[in-house]
Length: 287
Length: 264
Image (cartoon, rainbow over the protein chains, first blue to last red):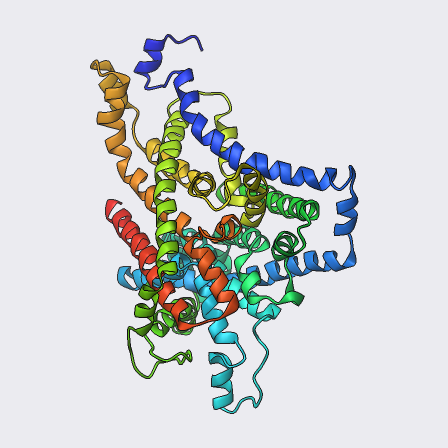
């Protein structure tokens, strides 16, 4: 540890003081703009209107527990739909030639780069009472009165699945691409059928990608705000829109702080727990 | 034989399903862009004729242009702040043996996990007292904090691929640290720095939750403007504004992707 400045320089290492100085701006931004304000917000939930857990007794109200429960259900349903729809797309990307794969990847990335706000606008155009979906269904005489789709949980789940699909497709496609082509070939030579190759080789080896995608989608959906705010109704609140409502309509900062603590603990907690699972999976897969 | 690579059931059954899902993915973007060229106020799809009517109306309304320029200004300044802070931190983390490097890198990921709604109201609560709501500095500070992780992740990955021997050789041949940085390190990590810059720019321009809460009455970002409009009416003028928006973000990200593919 007692290297001289010259020796350190020759090893390409930066002096300690300089590197601390270089980390400072980022540390200041992250602590000053994200960490400190967030902690202060969470703190108000314990200190105001009086010291104690009053705001958390309020979270425990059946009404709000229902919102929490609905948030988990919506996140779960979105994750499930995203896996089911994402896997076939990932297989197409991993198996196709260069040009077909490029077209498919473009179809995944363009929506990812289209702001969620604009995509919500598109879903409103589709789902509203005289929107494209209802007009099509009435014209083809499948229904006589327009269906109520907008401002329901179904609209929120469909739109959220659309938002989250790219985050599912990309990690699965990466894990599929990483499978050595020799493995399915060897299985084929040993007489395995297409289905048994899928169930016993492709699917197990793509599990790390599936786990990564599910983790990302579930956590992102828990905190999603724009989609439920625009496509959900007052009866389809999620925890994030409930937090927004406390600020924009009710001005109840301490309760918003309490709800935020629940959301942050859920997001960070799930990430931490599943990360460990992910690593465990890798150990099992590669050792 | 690419088809033999990952044998999976019958590809003839699978691939139509995959393409249908890809159609579902691309459809909303396509519908918005196509509708912006429809002359009708009723959102008919497909439109019976094409016109630039809504784009003229958009150009005639200075409030759209103003919020667009405000967002572009924020995105530009955010990119500069985020790139300087993030590149410096990435170099310090990769090229030093500071204690707690791993901890720092773990903390850098936190802004990517904490939901934006929480950051948005937390920042709003503090910034309102500091007079930073609805002004450029406030937006740039939050957007830089939210995007600096991307810069650190991308630049530190590039630095780790870069053999330290190049820098050692320059230093041994008598270059000062500054010369070594300017002539060796910086040129070699420039693609990663520029790439993360595009990502930062687009992320800031796209950001809607923090922008929703931090926008003032007069100084509104384009995302806040879109948010309000979409919530009250769904006029085709929003489609025209969205199309302009999509051209900027998709154009920039497509350029970045093509550039990076060529690199590798």
